Length: 240
Image (cartoon, rainbow, N blue to C red):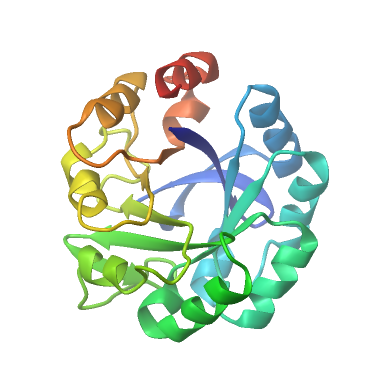
């Protein structure tokens, strides 16, 4: 299982929010590049970056901070937030992003995902962000009428490298993973599933690995990592 320490960007800083609400932001580091180096030095093999302002506005807002992260670390970076067009995707891949995450367009214009996955094999992921059973879009400010499995199944056999499933109702709360909710999706699609939202302790990682059924491919680590409730060494050992 691959662990993805998260760097959520708001107004140029590394923050954590609750349920995706930007008004709840707590700043953990004013230097996202330094934070990225800390996670890489801690032994993590990937970094998960989201432009929170961009997700809401529909275009890159924290571009400078993302570029600083890309220049600061040699580990691969996956990036989401405000990426809506093929030109956006191409620009970020040329800038050095290893995997581009598409969320809103996966709901509203899935053809862009199909074209991107064909053009950049294994470099496109789909973010499926779930609130009270429905998939949210536009930086989680709007709800669709689609459920997670319906969205996930759109992208079978098109070359998408991962599905990042976020439990918005638990995101930023350290309430613990809803393991079965992630597993229910992993069991019905062939695309690797990365779990996000609510991770509280290393025990959550152990429970993810131990569940019967299709293996969960990865997990995003957020507030619990920043708070020190999870130590990188212990998390990586549990995931190995």
